Each structure stands twice: as C-alpha cells, then as structure tokens.
Length: 322
Length: 308
Image 1 (tube, rainbow over the protein chains, first blue to last red):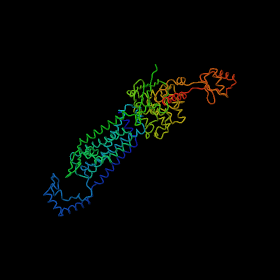
Image 2: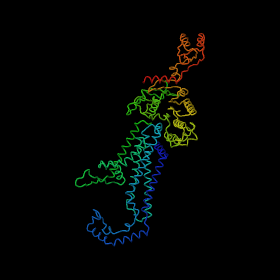
Image 3: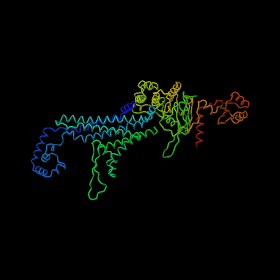
Image 4: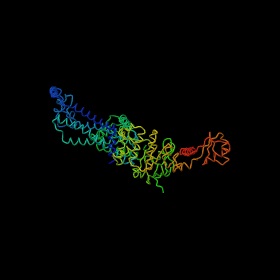
C-alpha cells in the first residue's frame, strides 16, 4: 500500500499527466456542450411553424396513397415485425420531421455517447500509462527506485495499481460529468420521464466505460514497461489504429471478431453485430452476421490484458535495469 | 576474522548480442571488509560498474555468488537493501520534479518522512536549492542530490560509483571530505573511481580489477608496497660513469634519459660519498615514492598485454 501511495504521488506530480487529465476534461466538456447545443429546445415559434408545415403536408394526396399501400403490405413499411403503431400513425407527417434538430433524447444517446467517451478516455488512459513509466525509463529513475525497493514484483505491481486506479477514476469522472450534464439538461427541458430501468442500464454502461479506461491505461503501462520507450508505444498504437485494422480486414476478413475496435463496440454497447462477407462470391454474395456478445468481449479483453501484464512483469523481472 | 560486507566468488557476467558474446566480469572474487573506505579501481570497461549493478540487483549475474552483509544476493537483497546506499554511474532522478520531491518519493518508499529529507539536504548542502527542478541543477548539485538520496537510508554500506565525475575541484574536495567523514563514522564506503590520487588520499583498502578479474586487493599501503619499487633518483653529468660506479658497488641501477634510478632503499649519504670518491658530483637526489597510480598502471598494463 505504501508503494502504491508513492506511485500515486509520483503520478500526480507529473506535469504531462496533469495536462492529459485536463485534456480529457476539456474534451468531455466540448462533447457535452456540443451535444446540448445540437439538442437544445426548439423555440415555440419554430415549433409552431413546423407543426403548420406538418399539417399542410398531411393533406397532400401522396400521404393518403402511402398509407393505403402501407395498410396492404405493412411489413414493407413497418419492418418484419410490425409494431402496434398503425400505418397512419407511422406515416402521417409530424412536426419534428420539419425541425432541423431533434430534442434531447438520453435513451437514444445512451447507445453511442458512451462509446465516444470510452474511445477518447481510452486513448488518454493509454497515453497516461505509457508516459508515466516511459518518462521513468528515460530518466533512469527506475534503477534509483530499485535501490530503495529491490522487490521488482512489488514495484511493478504498485505502478500498475496506481495507473489502473488513476485511469479508472478518470473514466468515472468523465462519464459522470458528461451524463450529469445530459440528465440535468433533460430534466430542465423535458417533462417526459425516462423509461424504467434507464438508470440501471446507464450505470452498467458507465461501469464498462470505467473498466475499459482502466484496461487501456494498464495496456499502455504494460507495453511501455516491456519496450521501455513511450514513443515506441505511441507508434504501435498509431500504426494499429491507422493501418493495422484496415490491413487485417483487407487480407483476413475472418479476423473481424478478434479486432480491438469490434470488441470495444461489443463491450461498451452490450453486444455488437459484425457482418462477414465470404472470401469468394459466385452467384450471389450472402453475408453472414456474427454477434459479438458482452461476454465474448469481456473474455477477449480479459485474456489480452492478462497476457500483456504477464509478459510485462516477466520482462521487468528478468531484464537488467540501466 | 574480519567481517566482510561485500563478498563475491567467481562472479561472471556475460552479455549476448547479435555481434556475439561479451564477458564484462570474469570470475571476480572480491572481499570488502567492514569499516573504512575501500577503493574499487579499474580502467574503463573493466567491469566495475557491472559488478556494482549486480550487487545491487540491477543486473543479473551469469554465474557466481554474491553476498552483502553475509546475505546472498540477489535472493536476499530485500533483507539488506535498506542498509545499502548507492550511486551507480550518474545520478538518475525525474528531471521535472524538484530535488526535494525526488527525495521525498524515495524517503516514503522506505517509510521515512520530511525530517529525514531535511536532514540529508542539509548534510549535502542543498538547502535553498531543494525546491528547484532537478533539470536546472548543475552536475555537482545532481551528484550531491544523489548522495543525499543514498544517505536517506542511514546506510552501513555506501557504494559510490564515480561520485566526483564532472565536479569542479571544490566539488571534488567536498565529496572527498564527505566520504572521509562517512568512513570515519563507521560507514563502509566502496568507492569506484578513476582518480587514483583521490582513492589513495581517502581509501584504507583497495581492489584493482582489469578485464573483469581481480588483479590486486588489500590495504592501500600493502598493495602499493608489494608491487611498486622505491628508490632514489640521481642526477649526474656523466650518467654512464655513475651507473657503472654504482653497479660495481652492488646497487640495482636503472638508467633513464636524464638521470639514474637506484632501486631499493639506499642511504643517500653513502651514495653521494661513493660517487664523489669517483669524481662524480650529484646535482639531484630525489626519493622515488611508489604510488597507487604506478601500481595501477603496472597491473592494468600487464593485464592488457596478457589479454592481447
């Protein structure tokens, strides 16, 4: 515990890490501000104009024609499993169709917004993990620390715990900041209550974002501890994200379920469907859809993290320290 | 029996690279007794730093045994590391942190607090500059901070690898005084240095290594006395006649460019009398004192010749 506190102090004292954390909050604030601005309430005059236009459109003959066609073949219009909504309800022009922005909808946002948060906090967490230990290798201070605590397992673990905890807290704070803003705005702007179970689902998603951020920080730490250079890790990250996945997708289509991006989607969004196209098509190309479940992605990230951490510890234990 | 604080037996370190194998330390058996200042000498690349790094657990030995305070290392290093302070090569701290912050982090690692940090900062004379960032320190200040770090543990053994590298003369003197004071206070200091005069001034014992092997070890006076010749330098107008006269009288004489060197101890009065009787008048008579530098150069040169 003593060593973990020392590592947390070391982490807190690093200016680069303070800048990264501040950057995370700035990005979160921009994300929140942009979302609230684009979903801000519509003024009454604009809403009245849109309603008037919807009423005018509803009287157009093409609307009645489309409703009749829908009633004959509801599956063509309402999908393979038509809901209770009638064709008239579904096809009759509504005021929101003629507004240039949609009202704030937390339920709808709860699918994509957490993914955005996870992606940028994940990148920042990797940078924190990498720069924290990369700077120590660069300065040579790891050797100095080992002169005071020679048990390498303990030193490695204390640093890992500090980085994991710090990045998890970062993920939690960013997620809480963004969603507190969204929910407060919704409370102020809308009278419609949120559906039952929304808070629980959002909390679970939040926990997954926190776990993802911590794993990203640990991955950055583990790789940097092994290769001992921040720049190498940043290069690897950039190469993988820019060309690595595109290359794998292009040459090995079957690798889709093993890509970091797809597993990230599955982890944050509680499952993700991947469309797989056959290698060769003769008469017609029928893609297959493969579902990556939350459990699949949990196992994927669990194993990946365990392997990275294990290798990192092994290398740190065995290699000479300059 | 003398208690040993450092003991290595057949210590070996090999590095493997694409270019092949390189043996940095080759069967080194070293003994450093408790107390005093012990010099650890060797030319560049002789394996001094590698040996120190292996003792401190920073590098793995390929084979051989190492003991610190009778505990086998690296296995039992955690038991004794609290008793050993060290500076290995140049000081290594986080450049963006203040000197004090760097020391605080190390102090907290071993359960020490602010008062200990204040104490060591005062000991090395960094008070007033301790809140400056490490990167703004001069080389001398960095060395002093490193010594402060080593003193945080109140070590019984202090290992200093080239502690005066890059220091100006006054800095070297300060460090030398610190080392001497520590040695006198009961701390065992292992001082690895290139500066032979410095080692001879402050060290009680010395070990000299070359190409990873021990060449000589023991109290400085014994190492110097056993290996370097002493004698008298004699200046004469006619060196050939002088050499002949002295050799006839049974002296061991070596002729150099501008003078003769009479090896072994001689009575200067008898020597001048002998020469004056032969009509040869001495214009210089200087005792030749063996020093560590002479011994070091003799040993390492011989080792180099053997290796070639």
